[in-house]
Length: 112
Length: 335
Image (cartoon, rainbow over all chains, first blue to last red; front, top):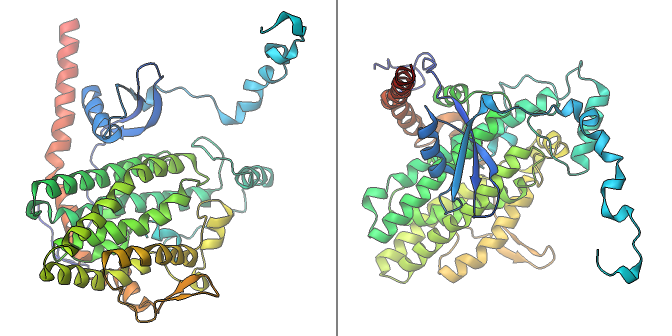
């Protein structure tokens, strides 16, 4: 590939490097210890799922932070919308009878 | 600093702090959350200027990590022992990983990796100017770990509380890994200082060459930093340039004493009234020269990155071709 000399320097390309097709984006979830759940730790680009798993191991578990890795194409994630947060979650907020502290139990019953 | 973007006026940023058409109630809610030390997450509403500033800062931080692999990478093949080689490999690998955490965080703001790489390779985006200086010998490897990573840690710890969630979380990961970087550099220098006179002289010479550059990493003095105020109000920048620089000097002087090196500043002196070390003037002329492209290694660093990107094209294309072939094979098998 030739790089004609430019005023900025012999190695600067005269036009932008043609946009290469990106490897797709994957979200990474790591279970750091048996018994714990997988936690989201970030994203990475990889050509396919196997590749994504290997990259995830290299990027997110350099210090043995993982016993299990999940990779999911970012496009597959369905998320609730922050703008709907109020309506979406509000019904739960006023149902205080879901909490144990709502109920009065006599002391002589002991622990319940 | 790796986050030099905040300290240096950006001629390409023509964005007004608040766009005229941004709704007042959304701005208020946004600011209130920041003032309450809450976090802004990727799908949340945010002012356009907040988004753009963060894209610039996070991506330039990422570029700094990746370009930062080069000065030390230079010495991997010439490390004096297998132990030092393995350590340096691990450190440089970490820097690559840190760049990837940060690109990942920047992409949550709606910019693609391809765009960010293009900005770096065409010179439109910057990286921390500390990496535009050469590593002349093995002592430089130690000094970079001790002083450059040391300065970075000073800046990165407050960033763990940055208002933007993905950036803050990336910084927490990075800080966990960063302390080994500083310790390996310091220990390397201790080893040399306990060696021959030639080794001690080599360490002192490296310190002489890097000390002032590291102080400049924190960016221009507060009095000259026009753009910090908005970043502070939005919880992106937490501590001022001068305050960070002072903390760094105060922490480093005792470390230098234990090492047995002299920091090359005749004005460096404990001030009991201030409770801090006084220090001399930084050569800002030289700093701006380097930031603006005229440092000793700017062309070489960018050239190396461009070459790596171009020489690696076959790997990127090959991986996609392999993935496509595997998919087609699977479809045929299922048919």
